[in-house]
Length: 366
Image 1: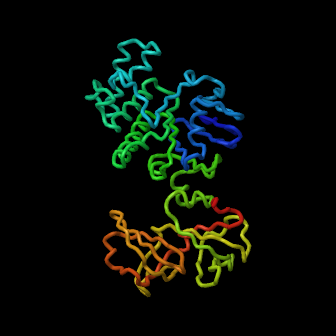
Image 2: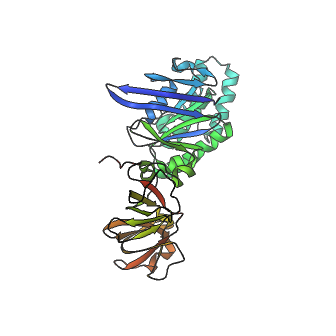
Image 3: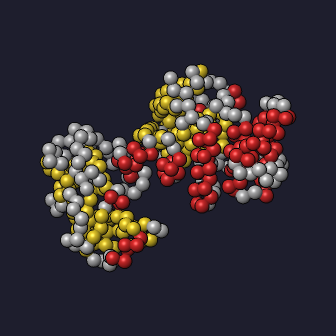
């Protein structure tokens, strides 16, 4: 049996469904991220695990014990909030020591534990500081150390980095993963930031409108999205709407017959010939070249370059393809090869194409 098991959890507020039939099995030491837009139910799920919310139905088991109705302070959970929630009248050292004192841990053990944790989060020289004297990143490190001080069975983090600037977020998320790996602690991490979830998780649970859309490794979520929402929410992706022309050969044509694509993945669902279908291609999969200068790819389309956007080592090209916007990412060192409003050739492999039937995978809400 898995270490943490959530089974058919449901939660409603005033008739509005917040979490619908949520089931998940988490192994001991695993790092799981709940990813989705605001209002999808990820924080409500986390709060049910913590015991701050009671599910309307379903169960929660931890290490073989059902904890669905057990109060939060008896579950052995460590919680890190977005707002840090530090005691302003206490130093960093005393904030970390607080839970240990409540648990009546001997003073000598408290001293050793707090010093050890402050060293773990790189704050061994800042224990004397108050929250007002520390940066946001330092305060969040204190909050993390405080949550870890009680040696929790599960570490829960609710969008802990969303209030920080971009540079600090990137640094601190890797620190969180380093600390989690070093301690081997089971962790559930809530975020709306797809890059954050993909970069630090063992598995990602993508949620939308109170339900799970897909559970998988970061690679599976990005490379093999199972629904239209996952494909479009995680990363940037191009969509070619067409018709299944020849399933055996893997040929898809544009609705007006103005283009044709060769695809490798044709087993997704029962897609009959003539059915409407969407072909998804990631921007980094597209090779851009001058007309008739492309490499040997199965698919080759012509488009007109409209904008060039520098994104550091990568440059994003926005192209017009029969009135549709297509995005391709190229190396920045190659950007000077292309001229605005000039036609270019877009090439990509059959394997770069991910298809979804328009019937099996409904469009996002308007």
